[in-house]
Image (cartoon, rainbow over all chains, first blue to last red):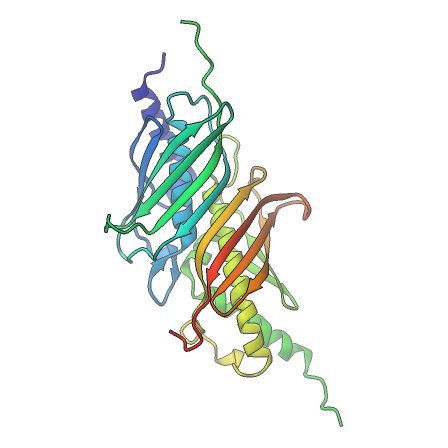
Amino acid sequence: METAKDKAQKTMQFIASLPFSKALQMQPEEIGDGVAVISMPYAAELVGDPASGVIHGGAVSALMDTCGGAAVMSHPNAGAGTATIDLRIDYMRGATPGQRITARAECYHVTRSVAFVRAQAWDEDATRPVAAATGAFTFEQLPQDAS
Amino acid sequence: MRPPPEPLHLIKQRRDRALAVLAEGVPYIRFMGITFDRRGDEVTAVLNYSEKLIGNPLLPALHGGATAGFMEVAAVIELGFHLLWDEVESGRLNADDLTPETLPRMPKTIDFNVDYLRAGLPRDAYARARVNRIGRRYASVHVEAWQDNRHRLFAQATGHFLMPSRDGS
């Protein structure tokens, strides 16, 4: 039987192996029990507003999506993979140029086939979020083992 | 007497220049490999496929974050081109003088909501945005994205945007 630790380890490895996550240099910090924390460094190639040097919302969106998926995969009842059904992002402010962005997603409810997720992202100022997200993801229950 | 019609190549040059200047100063657009096709005032954003856009390598499928970023770019460029179009066509702005540095400020995303309808295949994707409402401060934009078949969307999105203030701040 797979332990919670094995599952967290597997999810971490899977997230780190995705080509787009690699291109954005995403780094899993903490994954387990339906919660994921993933960070991403500032990069000049991701700038969306050259006048201010602020990272494009799309890059933050990718971090949120990845983090949401990781939270779902790490849920104790989660079986195989997951896919995003929908994701809504609210942009509260531009992330400060040069600073690392960290997202935390929580899979707060699952049904037989849907996982509900909320997430937030911060730069190095943890008191003021840069973005928040809510999403629905596909969910496959872990087959009930006979033991 | 009516003035002679403006030479075609000058019209195209001016409009292509206005569209190009919106995108060329943005590193993220280059990073993603997004380009634009223009027919009159209709803009199609093209996500040129590359391996780094893949999310799940087992399927393989485009990363949801790549799809979302692509659609957000399509929405902002549509809004920006919409704003620039009137300025350039009326002659208030000269397209030849436009550079990313002298460009009017662009709209800022307030929120963006993406529906994933089917997996994005490992090939080029296209998106068209429609401005459903544009006011002095806020705009609402809908985006459709497809791959092989225009009527088989793989994602759709709605976003709200804060318009730049008129005094340029």
